[in-house]
Figure 1 (cartoon, rainbow, N blue to C red):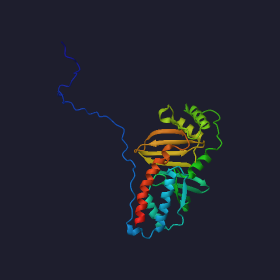
Figure 2: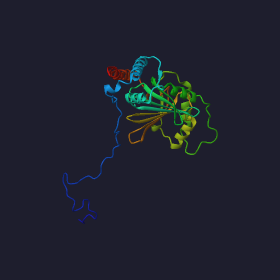
Figure 3: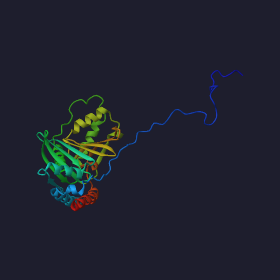
Figure 4: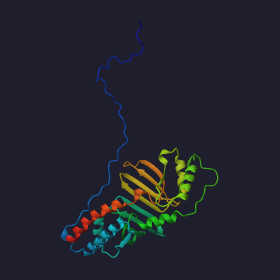
Length: 291
């Protein structure tokens, strides 16, 4: 028998179990590394609180308002413009920064609203800025600052402009998605579940997404929820229509959606979260009262 011209196994390769080291390895998607959780605020020493009776009284009002709102009452605002800079710094220390922040561009001409949820869900620090000048500073209690909802409502009633003429190159499925969004917007009713269009699972091109965003427009409200990764929420120029994009901790898009809903749930402080915040804030207020 003639020798086989190409050896199946190199002559110098050792044989047997464990003799061959596999160089290939499995590549896994990186898992999110950070998750925001509740951290109790750093409290001043009792002797350092003696000079802040206004702050103690104000935090008591916030506690009462939070309890009422968590039980179904309407939200409310408590101005802090008249407080001294040191008193407002103490309030910042007590409230901290939570997971959700928001921006309203051009709330009125030249005025920008910036809202930051505290570490207590349902308690927001809301400021109005005109350029670098602070125009208003207040604490707002509620699932979401009222100005965000009002602005999104105003933007959602802008006149819709249908596309005229030939579609842009590489736009394929976007016109059908726009029709679906418009149909859901027209049929939307309060309290109904969100209608979610998951663009991540659909055969859409980047041009499709660009066409879709152009047709539904971009509103003035932008929110960022930082939890297990980030979630970017923006209003559109259609009523009850939002763009919601989720990122992992590596800033990679993991879910890209259009939601037809009153407000995306990820942005809202739920009643049970506000009830939990009330219990945590009660401990802080009791500490302040003992100071």
